[in-house]
Amino acid sequence: MTGTFSQQAHVRVAIIGGGPSGLRAAAELAGLVDGEVLVIERESAAGGIPRHCAHTGFGIRDLGRSMSGPAYARRLTERAVRAGARVMTSSMVTGWAGERALEVTSPAGRMIVQADVVILATGARERPQPARLIPGARSAGVLTSGELQGLVHLDGRRFGGRAVVVGSELVSWSAVLTLREAGCRTVAMATQAEQREAYGLVGALGRLALRVPVLTSTRVTRVLGQQAVTGVEVEAIDSGERRIIDCEIVVFSADWIPDSELARAAGLRMDAMSKAPVVDTALRTSRPGVFAIGNLLHPVDTADIAALDGAAVVSHVMAFLGGSSMSSDSIDLIAQEPFRWIAPARLRMDARTPPRGRLLAWSDERRYLPTIVATQAGRVIGSVRSPWPCVPGRVFRIPVRVLSGADPAGGPITIGLR
Image (cartoon, rainbow, N blue to C red):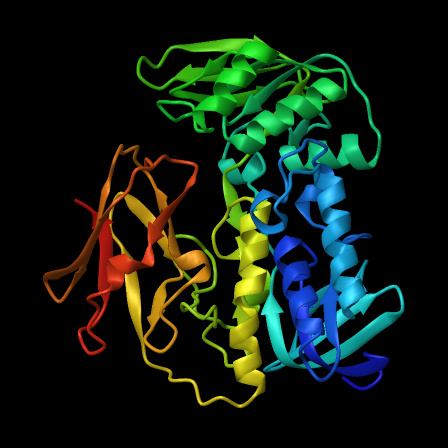
């Protein structure tokens, strides 16, 4: 390592990722810890995905007000800096040099950052066309919604023509608004789901105000064109009928995966279904002193929910820094169909309450007024009726009281629907 890394530094807390969860954790911790709180952000400015989103609706749950994405990102960054955290932008953590030592490349050179606590807040990203196994050339007209928003809101790009958006989640409608701002007309949204995935009011307003047809039970089978996009081929899942939709832009939205490369490189225990690091209800990973928060764990929830993860981790970080002898006793939480994954995936008996008192789950089926059932060693230990439906493509929230009857010695707990 000598001669390769020109600098070394020690910080009390290193937070990897300057999105909402990382910035909120930094703002809370900077005034509490004895030592430096460092946020390492790979982009040129902190704030995460909200920086790219010009529409309003950010900050409702954590700040108690609605603001645009860029304003929300600036507010979170300012709060962290004002609290005393250092935000190091244009800097990439490229690997691990020890249990809690990070290899960092920045404009100032390469360095080793040794931390007493590491918080992974690297977020999530959308699967691009190749990862979705959709044939066709990867031309300049093929984008994810994140790439689109960066081009339009950060770089000021404008382009006309027609677009097809793949997906119908909240971020998909955000892409429609961004396309409209860029001067491009969305001629169709295509989703494999049987019903639209966005909340009903959002979808209804989108269809009425923006007049975008939503093709449900429809998959994109091919992107047409070589140097430039000329259209997409879509297939009706029920009938197998295929047709061509002419367009110059294709936006692949949603279908989120966690940015978990660093977690895997650390050898952390990973969830096979979500591809995220496994954490317990104290947001601890399988490596002591390494925590994980935000959309790295539950891809993908709203920015303000991710920020509240950053607030929730603070007491557990402080307990670790204070040398608290926290019990390692925990119980695996196993998702049962139609749930694909549960986060947190371990119940800590001495820290039983996850952020906001909710377990988060991802459902592959739509269920109205579902009853969630927790089973341990063949017996039901709790059940909760939810007024909110399970909907594919949307995080489902489960009150942690469903685990109220958990036996510390009873083994794994399965969570499913009646």
